[in-house]
Structures are given as structure tokens and as C-alpha cells.
Image (cartoon, rainbow over all chains, first blue to last red; front, side):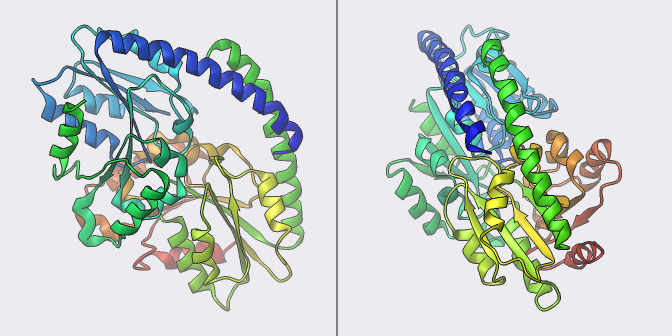
Length: 219
Length: 219
């Protein structure tokens, strides 16, 4: 883009982000009042965000009262998958929007009965870049990578890694069939975020999910 | 985002896109003059874009004269990988930019000696959403999915599928270890793009690459 269009775009983006942050702050205050722990779950398309939430909702049944918001450009497929395990699910269709925004989260929450809810999962649009800059009012940001994406994805997405409160590395059941430098991946993460926990999991086989559930329960 | 910020943003985005389209048109004209076939290769993070280009450059050695532009937020890793197989590679660092823009392609091409080049690969930033709307001056758009991303990715990314001149489905070597509804995936594609060819490939094992090289050579 030319310098001309760039100088026009910057102040507009600033206004958009400020408006977003104001709404996110109000959402955060309301969730805190209600005692709801809210997770913004971010990851690439096909990293296994919905599969992780399916396994998590199954495991938490009867122990916690979760609600789920799920963002996609199109289709209700993820919402339908998650509605099998949770009676408070809202699918957000973003059209051509590459990430969720605070106003979408606020409006979706208004459609839910939050009485008794103590845990909110917001499954963001599959994208390692755009969701990072938009505060949704979450308590914690969880970043999901998967082994099949390759060991270079942390280094290539520094903002995503730097912002994460927890990193999950999914699809470890496929490790025997892949070449993935686990030590190199972790070294890249440590340069960007020295203290973030990294949990190896398989949403399919359930391996490693106990550590994730413990992390959730400790919060 | 509020209606207020949205109404401010829309005319700005229109100006940005118009400026982008003007530059892309000039690039397209120059590439046509030089007889260069240019591919905008788009896919999710970890779908295997760089691995596909490595295999393609190896296979074309001595038969075609390719050049490569490769976009990433950070690191020179992909550029370094591809420079082993091609002496005309430019790595474009987008910072926090979620897609390539025409001006970046134009400026990167200016750094290359294009004499004798007949094929240009532009590896876009790993993202199924944002790259779609930005014309780079390419001759064809190639969309890369991979089996590990799941069979719902076409339906969930309708613009990506509708815009593609060719779709590649990578990582078929992992099929025995995954649950992937190949017929359902293709049915979703057909609703969005009735005539686009879909080629099943493995950039790792080389399976299916002949069909891709034939598609390239026929152009």
C-alpha cells in the first residue's frame, strides 16, 4: 500500500482499536463480577481448537458450568459440534472478518443465560496473526499450535507467542509420522515468552489433557 | 467494532484496495511482457507451502527459470530454505502484516534480475483469509489445503475456495493416520467453485507432484 493510504489508515485503525478496548474492558468487568474465567483460544485453521474444546467440555461435564462462543467466517459446523457437549453455545459468523472483535463477544454473551456459568471459552477465528491485537475481555489467552504445522511456527508468529498466557502443542499422537524439532520449537518460544507454560497434548487420544484441565482448574 | 468506526473504515479500505489494484495491474502487465507466469500460492500456516516449493524447484531444475518471493511476519527461514534450490529468491518481512500487498511484490521484483525468468512463485503469508482480497498481479491463484487441517476447511473459507484457479490437497501421505472425508471436502469445494481442479499431493513423498508439474507446464 502507498504511504498515502497508510497514513490515512493508521488513525482509523487507532480509533477502531480504542473502541474495541473500551468494549473489552466493560466485558472483562462484567465477567469478573460474575466470577467467570474467560479464555480466548487462538490457533491456526485446523490446529484442533474445536476438537480440544469437545474433549474439554466432555471432561468438565458435571464439574464446571461452561459457555462457549465460537467464531468462523462461515458455517455453523463448530457450534453444532460443541452444542453436543454444552447447552450454552453461540456461533459467531464473521463473514470476511479474520478475527473476533469485542463487540461480537459482547453481543453473543447477551444471547446467553450466564447464571451459574463459571467458565467461558471463546474459540477465535482460525488465524495466527489478526486475532492477537484484539482484546475481547478475556482473562487469559491460550495459543494452540499443532505438530503438523511444523516446528517453525513460534518463531514466525512472535506476537502470538509473546501474548499467550499458555501454549498448547496439539496432535502429539502424530509425532511418529512427522519430523518436528521439539527442543528447537521450545527454544524459539523462550526467546519470545520466557515463562509461558507449554503443554503437549492430543485432543484426539486425550494424552496430556490432564495437565490442561489442571491448569484450567487452578484458575 | 461499532457502526461509527465501521463507516469510517470502509471508505479507507476502498482507497487502500484501489491503490493496491493499480499497482497489481502494472505488475501484471510487466510480467506478461516478459512472458512470466506468476502464481500467488496461498494456504494456512503449516499447510506445506514452502515444502511444496522446495519439491517443485528441485523438479524444475534445468527445465524452467523460476524466481520466488516469500512473505512471512518474521524470520528468513523460508527464504533460506528456498535459496538452496533457486538463485532468485527474495524474503519479504511483513512485520504484523497478515498478507502480501501489491507494492511489496513490486518492490521485491525490483530487487531481482528477471532476465530469462519464465515462472514466478509468490508464497503468501500463512493465512486462509486476508490474502484472498489482495491482487498481487499474479496470473493464477493456487490454494493449498492439507489433510491434517481437517475436511471442513473449504466450507469454512468460501472466498479462498471461490478465488482459486487450482486447489492442492497436501499431506496425503498422512491419510492412514487421520480421519478425513475426502468426498465431503470435494462436495464443499464444488458448491463454491464448480470447475476448479483439485490435486492430491504429498510434498514430502512426492506423490501426486507430476500432476501439479503438468498443470504448471501446460501454462
